[in-house]
Structure formats: structure tokens, C-alpha cells
Image (cartoon, rainbow, N blue to C red; front, side, top):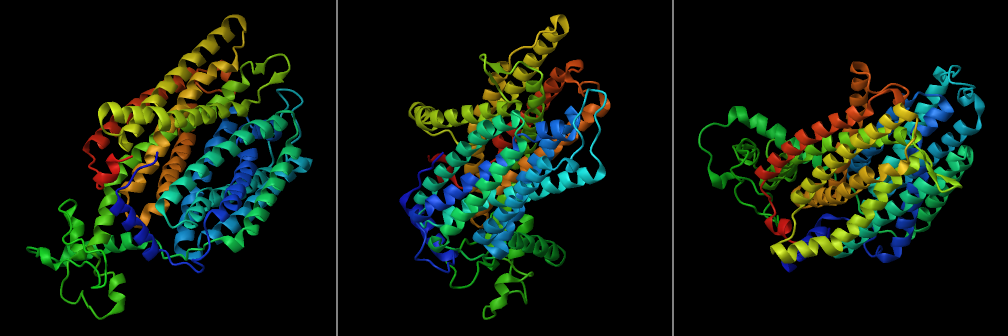
Length: 556
């Protein structure tokens, strides 16, 4: 959700942008770049959705991989797609710049689309189709290797463009208000292209036209690259300024170095605030996490005012750098709660496709819903909820209570709704198993709309609020990679989902290859318990957390 900033803060933000961002062509950029960046991003997202959204069904139908093992692919791929943006953001900020990273990643994504097309078109790259349930040949080592290589290349390509292209788009604007407008359209465009991928493209795949669907995704990817290159002459390119993580490492190293040789009382006037020309004079560091304050403490030989390299010394840091590390440490407990939240959601997203495959997916007499397209419902419900929250609920709350609903409370609502969705999944799965066991009745897939809708609404509370929280609370040097922080615990959550499903398989009989003979409802009840514990942990962290930027935490 948008936050209104005091006028002086807006001016400071714009000034800081002017000071920090070094551009090779500062007279370019603006709204003329919007259709090129948004259009190419939509094409890249649509191309990636064609393989990402339906990887479970593809692994089962084309590679004869059993149900639960195929469901694991969803978590592995989901983790990779959310992990590679971290690496891409670091490379963009530190070495190559956003433009180069997006361009190279786009070509890698195109290579992945071509390899998926080949895997579907060339019979020798996959095992022969199953003739019946007892004669399914598993993939050979070479076929597995080609599939894994295809997935890895596709994940690198998609992950390398997901958030970096958003940063490139924001670089085209100097005013924070214009950047916020851009991000609103950016999120909407991602959801719109994802909905197309989850419906039209997957419909082709459900009809067995895998090669055609992957071929279309490759063509769309190529068009996206052409559109991106077409707009190159208009882009405002910000030069990389070095990784902010280096400053964090310097504070850590310097603190531990001085922990040995600094003793006695510290003079509050002896803290380093940077060069005399620095606009940022904080004064003394705060008393919290005081161990790190010694990194900014000036001792004999540390401070050489006329020496240029001292500002990047591993013996002395500025107070601002110390406070930046403290902000990051204080936000870590809030961030860590999202790991289990994404683990719970990741397990549900994997298993719900298996549920859909075992349910009646007919909508009317002539249309059968593809199993993977069931995941379009969280997108639709989340988009609708996001609009209602932004235009109705949040303003109404502010009018009644007298203050806006702050980010941490919004995130908490998302946690609670995720817990409710797991209970809904468990009850529906129990009903499905009972009817299947009693009279072999297959219930409608539409039963899954309720829990999926709850997941979508929970993300509309959780995801934007989390981004707002990290944006306002993390150090300014890390704000451009705040979205990547969210992406990181999504990646960890997906990999933990894989570990969770493997653990359940090894220790229980709840997830056999044929889920009709299992107890998936107990898996969902376990997820509900995990979600409850994690919700309690989050509430404790949120209760203890104190906003470092009070103005931004209370303004909308």
C-alpha cells in the first residue's frame, strides 16, 4: 500500500537519490521507457509461467515421475525461482548494473524455453509413455540430466529478471511518487501475465500440446527481448555503486577486532560520522546492540582525515554504517517468521495440484479445468482483495481508528488467514477421502476455491505489507534489494517444503503415490499446527519490535 511522506522527507529522498545514483545518461528515462520495460517483463513472466506453473503435471505425464516426487519438483523449482533473484540483485548492485543483468538473464530464459521445447518434441529426451499402471519406465540418467539442466537454466533466467527488471524500471524515475506508481503497475502486470499463463497456456498443455505451448513461450520470450532492446536508447542507466553487504561485513569485522583491544569507558564524542563533507551526521550511536558501536569508535591510528581510503577502512566504520547493521539485525526476527509461513504455503501449493488431479474438474459439459490452473484462484482472489483493501478497508480503518493499519499488523492478518486456509484444506480433503472410500464418489474441484481463496487473500495482506515494512525499516543502502529479502525466505520456505514432504513420506503413510490411499488431511492438520506455532512466534516478535522510522510506519 502507498505511504504518504512528509514534504521534507520527500525532499530528502529525492536529494538522496540525486546524490547516490550516478547515471551515464541522466537526461534519459521517464515514462517513455514504461511500455518497453513493462511489456518485456510481461512477456518474460508469461514465458516462465508456461513451464513453472505446470511442472508437476509435466514431470508426471512426460517423465513418468510418481505423484509425490513430482510434487517435490514444484518446491525445488519454486525455491530456485526465488533464490536466484538474490544473486541477480547482488550482481546488479555490485558489478554489472540492472540493464546488463536483465538482458543476459532474458537470453538465458530463452535458452530454457528452447530446451523445454526440445524435451517435449524429441522422444529420446524422455522415457516412453506408460502403457498401463504397472509398466512405466522411469527416466534414464541422461534424461534426468537434461531435465535438471533445463530446469536450472530456466530458473536462472526467470530469477534473474523477476526483481531486477523492477529495479531498472524504478531507476527511470527520480521522484519517489513516480516510482511508487511504476511499482503499482509492475505488480499488476505480473499478476495479469501470470493469469494468462495459468489459463490459456496450461489449457494447451492439458490438451497434450506441450511442444506447442513451450514453442509459444519461447516466441513470447524472444519478442520480450526484442522489445527490451528496442527501448535501450531511452533507458536511464544507473551505475553500480558496490554491494552494501561489504559495509555490513566491515562493521562485523571491525567490531570483533576492536572487541579485543578496546577497553574502558568510551567517550561519546569520539565516534566517526564520516568526512567533513558528509551530509549525514548522526552523532553517537544508539545504546541498543552496543557491541557494534566500537566499530565507529575512533582510536589511535584509525582516523586519518586527509587520507581518502579511510572511509572504506576495515579498522573504522561510520556511525551510519553501524546503525544500518543494527536495523538489519532487528528486522531479522520478523523476516525469519516468513520462512515457515512460506513453507506452509509451499507444501499446500504442491499438494493441491495432486488433489485437483483426483477431483472432478469438469466445468459444465464441454470444459475440463487443467489441474495446474487451479492455482489461478489465489491470484484472482488476491488481486480482488488487494483492490478492496486499498480502496475500502484500509481507508475505513483509518477513519474509524484514527490511524492506518501498520505493516506488521497487516502481515499478522496474513499469517492468521494462512492458518485458516490449512484448516479448510484439511476438512475438504477429509470429505474427499470419505466419499471416495464409501461410494467411489469424486467431489468437484470447486471445493478447493475456498482454501485457495484464503491463501490469495492472505498474500494480499502479507506480501505488500512485508515489502512496505522492509522498505521503510531496512537501511537506505538495502532498500533497492528489500524485495529480494522477501524472495530469500520464499526460497528457503520452498526448500523446507521439499524437506517436509520427504520427512512425512519417510515417517508416515500419509502420502503414498496414490493419494486416495493416504491421509493428506493429516498433513494439512500438521501444517495448521506449525502455522499456529509460527503465528505465536511472529506475534511475539512484532510485539517487541520498535519501528526505527516512526513517521513512515504510521503514515499511509
